[in-house]
Image (tube, rainbow, N blue to C red; front, side, top):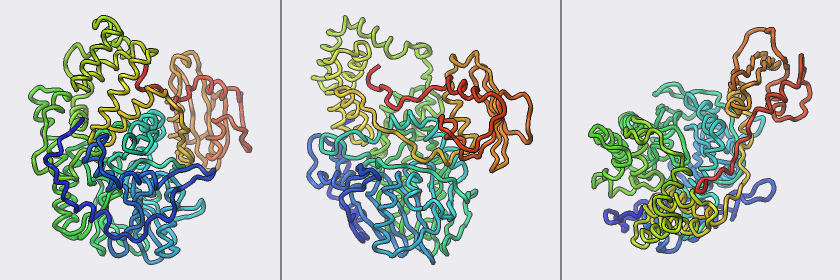
Length: 604
């Protein structure tokens, strides 16, 4: 993915001036550690970015990573601060009459606590009087336990569907997304010129403890106003943009506009490489137009939950307008070419941005990319099938690989062909051939090493940070194998509703193993006086809410809601009452699969 830098003006230093503007204090520590002394965030990890761009990095991505490495407490405008460079995302702090409103408390509790401590060391020991979650991604809510204690009772605001979408992404598909997220963020890559230099949106994600708390106030409409600690917030709902549940907000008295993650200093993802629901580029562009109309005239500064602010009414209006044009152009041109009969892969090679967007630093594909965003738009409308009947029933990867290798005359001949493409500079086709070689003969170290070398070269030439990380992480695992790291949702499970817990169980049922198992369990949660019936038949686990005790269950369980997760985990739980055969729970446990957080990606 080596890209030309001809349209880019590297002498333009406006972004650097904006990224440094308002610095109050740099980090007061070299690293953030967890309860056991493990390093959660290392500020020194980005020090190498002070040097010139090496030949192992795209100059444009290197520049973006230099900008993202700025860390500390920054003043955005009077009464509005941000802590940046303490995680993948920013924590924004809005000062009120009694304390401070925290917006998007980072990924992990450790980093959020350190960010809040830095703020308080310079702005006083202000209590947290409210929390705003702008959207349903973990880097915008995961650090909540770092800014609120267990007994703190303050308003927590979020858009509609926040809990459902947070759980769907981080729990239902959480294991797969976290595993692919290792490739996405480069979490296992060593920081440095040949390894991790950032993801475009920030440096990387912290490795601390994420958590989740349900909102107490739901923002249900655009134009809704809430006064938090004496500060007036005016909200704009933007569902199906960067997240399924997302919102921007305006601070009218401070003439400050927060764009959440809907307008940042890069081209964002229409479909993130770690996996997610495909986003709607059409409505994304329309909500940006709406933001210009609603808020731009009354704003002097625009800030977001990533990157650095934009000051000046003319500049922020132009920024929002160009961001709008970016997503609208991608959407409209992809559909234009789709309706001419081109497939997503073909369109991704055809589309080029207009010169004004091609040369805009904030429209470059550091986190998303033009190529994979076009494919995502095609996928949203047309699905996985490209319309060619041969695509309907292809062999799975390993069986396809064996046949390709056979067609090329065996593995040695395939490797020789791949080397010739590699030597000719056709890294893309070399990678395709070598994928087949590795899947056909996963024990051949020479095939894996040649593919790793190809990935390495592709990564070092990528302008998109997430492409670079995917290539380099793939190379690393080809050479070293998968090294499992602890992957945990922290205390997020405690925030799940009963329905979400049962949904999580249903996803784990091994269908064939459960075909012959039929059982019914009634649950009475005594603290909430809620009753549910859980049934398993035909390999399907179904839960229903009931208003009164029912008959015919194999087992009835009475307990508090807090006892459900420990009980399902097989722990001894006090205060649980059983009526019927407790062995039914063992039968249920026996048909549940455990997710694999270390599944193979670059090998079969």
